[in-house]
Figure 1: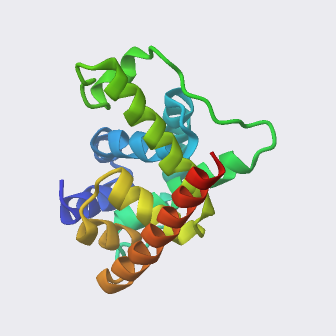
Figure 2: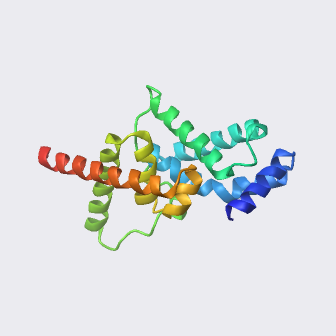
Length: 187
């Protein structure tokens, strides 16, 4: 669905159309789950955070301004929920192995287990290095480089200009590269 269709569904949901809201949930939940996973590294928490986001969206839909992009508003709520979750003192990052629901969100595993191990270790280093970024840089970096989102779509969804996204991404990449070099030097 494009932004125009999402906006029409959101306006209908704002007027009380539960079927429109359900369509929004069904159409955007996978994206939100993947986004939350990048923050928390756990599929169960990612699904819970996505559900919490939809509850907040439903409660606050009357506050959404139809003159602004719906996805930017939705992603801001979701991103803030993920960040709040990480600030809780009892939260720790962990991966839930063997989760069957993960298979539809993940790419197929490579044939070589050694290659898979190297890929996972590199992904963990990238995520650890991204902790050195400012919140704005981290969001842009995760959405574009880790989630492989289209830069123009990400800029629209975040409500920022394309040039701003490109500049932010450039500095985020430089900072991640420096953090990775530092990790290698300390190893």
